[in-house]
Image (cartoon, rainbow, N blue to C red):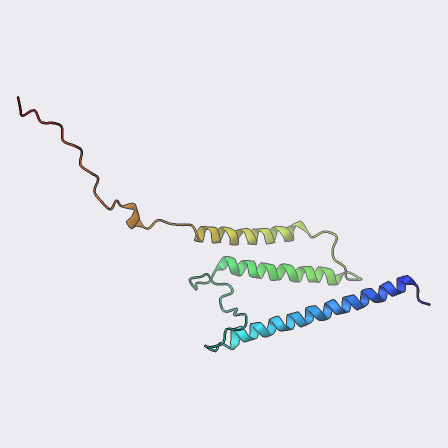
Length: 146
């Protein structure tokens, strides 16, 4: 007769396998939607995730801050995967090094500050000029009756 600990181990393995399968299916669907949105650009279809402007601003220009945030996020996530898989057995580190969090914080802050500076409202020069000339000062009363 299996012990209760053996049953919990089997239950944990089954739940882990189900979660892994669910995440894999979800990733496949996301990749299909990216494929549909990026490569299958038919005029009548509005389906999919279009990554054409992933690192561009609303004006269409490339954004260095977005590109930096994207690259730093990939580098840091791949480094974390490498750290996790390099231990025997693979396990999550007890603490994430401060340097990694610092780099990610610097990248995120530069993106947020760049976005804030970009969306700052600027007055066009025409609105700074008065539209009407200022009224003339009132004339002093004339002393013509003397």
